[in-house]
Length: 276
Image (cartoon, rainbow, N blue to C red; front, side):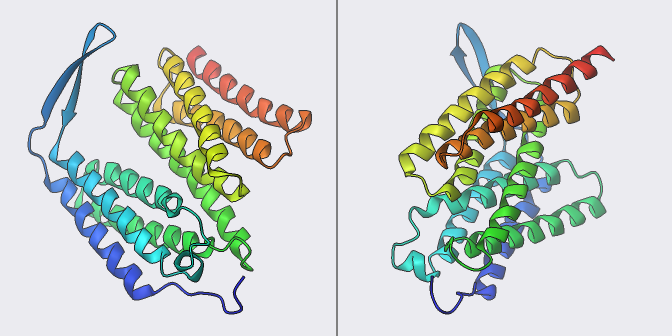
């Protein structure tokens, strides 16, 4: 740990966020018809619609990754190659931008659009500030910033799972998107364990596969968007929590029982909703 706590360049951060918000601001204006790309998967036709708004969203996410990487590399540990792979610091900001884009596309009034755009900027500022503070895990307040990032990771998981569920398109697409989201977020959550990169990626893949299978099965339940999102984030919380404890070599029967209760709560939530 360095003697003087590194500080994030706020001017650079403001510039990066302004550029990202400019890209996001264009999304509600892009109402041009999309183009469907079809393919045959598992014996049936699968159509994927490509829209201008979707492409701009991906561009905004790419800009976020590039901007965050530039900011992270201003940290002394990153400059001296002691921070490890920096792609991990891209995950939460990029997913936050994708979530914000979905909200902006649904804004019904100019006021809602302005509030959501402002909220997106504030969230990005907090996330990038927290990511920078955790580059050195031994820094005085790194643990507090990491806890905040964990909370935001689960909040993003709920929002993205709910948005994907709400589309009600084929399970092959929704389950795959949820699995990818779970994979990325679980890597972010498990990185703080300081386990080897290979182990983190392997455990993340296991979490993603199980969550994707659960999402596929849950598509057959009669559940509203909020209930489905809550159930999926509870399952994700249990899976990622078990993986973190495993990497920390703290996985015991008591820990398994605690996370098992969380999974049962998710199942009970679905059963209660379907019985109504």
